[in-house]
Amino acid sequence: MLSNALLFQLGWFACVLGARHPALLAVAVACLVTHLSCLARPGEVRLIVAVSLCGWLTDSLLLALGVFEFGGHRWLPPFWLLLLWPVFACTLRHSLHWTANPWWRASLLGAVGGPLSYWGGVQLAGAGLPLGTWPSLLVLAAVWALLLPVLHRLGRPTAPACERTR
View 1 (cartoon, rainbow, N blue to C red):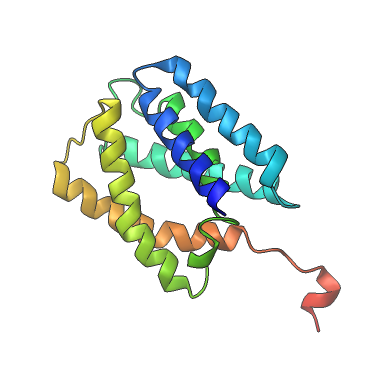
View 2 (cartoon, rainbow, N blue to C red):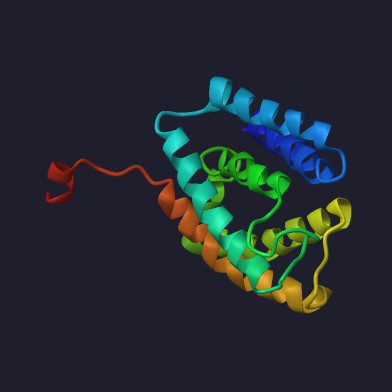
């Protein structure tokens, strides 16, 4: 669990600082590859893909709504933010597993940690919050209070059809 948390922190900083120093994105990719080769559990690649797609859609929507801006395209988040999603997804079955049950733990962590992560990322990456800091953080708190429990739900193993009918 500690290895996973350290890989995530290193990957997070590499992604966010990679906005200004793109060579650092290789460190984030290395963190992702290290997790997949050393720590990943069966079925985890599917979870990482699903969480990443959900995150990319969420960030694209938030970008389109003007919650944050990156000085680029209005619909597609920058590569460093796209890379951050699979790095984050690696934590759901490991260092953030404790937040999965009961659901309100994920909701509470999402409401607090999500906005703080974005705020830190905005500061380090040189992005903007056009709505202002507090309105943006409140929107992000509401989004992440709903999003993190949903992401944990994506990570639940599915039972074979014959077991679900019993």
